[in-house]
Image 1: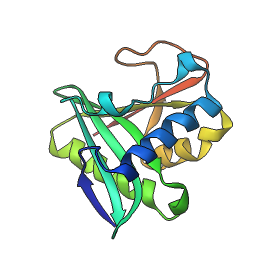
Image 2: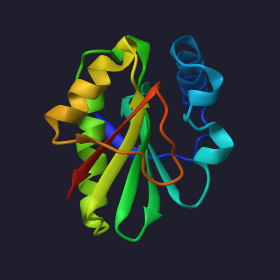
Image 3: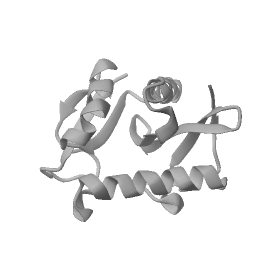
Amino acid sequence: MDINIDDLTKPEVISLINEHLHGMTLHSPPESIHALGLEKLKRPEITFWTAWNGEQLMGCGALKELDRHHGELKSMRTASAHLRKGVAQRMLEHIIKEAERRGYTRLSLETGSMEAFTPARKLYEKYGFHYCPPFGDYAEDPNSLFMTKEL
């Protein structure tokens, strides 16, 4: 699996982001969806990566810089054909290492509180993330859970 910075222009990547956004609408009310679309993922404070096996897109993830010491994990998604192959784990490890390389002291994330998000929460817990109050611009929301990890 190769993980590389991506410019979000390949059709497969655009399709995966659209799948990610659509998936959020299946499990969250509109006011609780915090997933980013293509244009927002291209902002300079966000680095976006894709994972590939040859020509096959396996998944994606992003890191948003909140400040010099704090990053936010964004847009973690595994392509449907590659679920349960360790893609999310590898992407998460990659992003944690990059956050450490940048000198961040904390990495945080927002995820859904619904049952559909349980596998993601278990992965984050496995990597040392713990539940926390809302951070950044987030507000309390019964459909959101917030997690953070000291680096």
